[in-house]
Amino acid sequence: MSEPRKIIIDTDPGQDDAVAILLALASPELEVLGITAVAGNVPLALTEKNARKICELAGRTDVPVFAGAVRPLTRRLVTAEHVHGRTGLDGPDLPEPAMKLQDKYAVDFIVETLMGEPDGAVTLCVLGPLTNIALAMIREPAIVSRIREIVLMGGGYFEQGNVTPSAEFNIYVDPQAAEVVFKSGVPIVMMPLDVTHKALTTNARVAAIRDLGTPVGLATAQLLDFFDRYDEQKYGTDGGPLHDPCVIAYLLKPELFSGRHCNVEIETSSELTMGATVVDWWGVTDRPKNALVMRDIDADGFFTLLTERLARL
Ligand code: BDR
Ligand code: CA
Image (tube, rainbow, N blue to C red; front, side, top):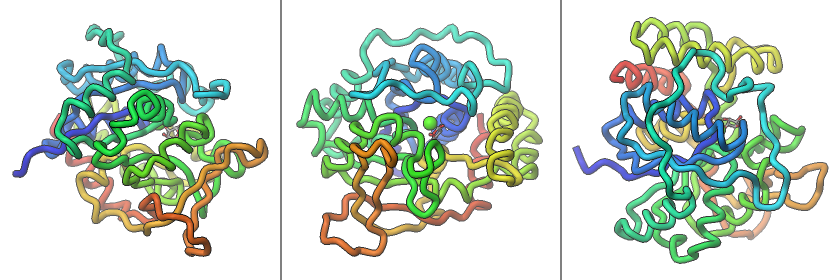
């Protein structure tokens, strides 16, 4: 096997973030250099703690966890306890983590890692609002050309929004940060709602994970059972969208996904459509193509990969 791909996971766990972290930690093709927490689904004090809980569940207390931004660049923090529960990780009864939070500020860790690792070696996997990444780019613009790729869950075009009629949660929470990142020139792979709404945690798929019969399989099934309940009611589907693990699955098996290179701009001024991702899918402008925007997923292949990898933990 070739050298594992070096990644930093920037995240706001969140049940689906937790499953994404487990998928990454279970996969030898990836070297998780660190996990950086950001405020999003719940406030930072909970997201950084949840990240540590998940590392402990995976038996990977060697992975450093850092706390980053407590709030978006300019807007007040919007959270999603109605989806994720009071802790952000409601569902399983996970113990309080014993592993320590790193002293270093997450934004410093991102900058120092990108400057210290070889040029083009590090991929950023972004599962929450883009605040930490934008702050790192603002603090040290030299990192921008050193990032191999940013693979992010965010936005929506055909499916529009999930937190407002036009905006997806991660972009809506910090549209100014998203704008910094989408204008940076870094190669971006975007996993929008158009993809994740096709990755449904059906009863049969969750049962296969529960049937692994391991502590990780059981905890993951409990996470998904809790996470499902809101979206099942909202969308009337068997299961809910499993958003964030699509980012990690793309690194492992890009052939599961298809999309096209487009220009993506972020709405940052209209309150009505704040955080909308304006995707030039049909190429009607000459604006530069700044992202590979995914639209389709082989959902069965995705859940097979996920289940097979979780079995390794
Ligand atoms: C995104 O928002 C969060 O609630 C999820 O963790 C995911 O990252 C989906 O819109
Ligand atoms: Ca998330």
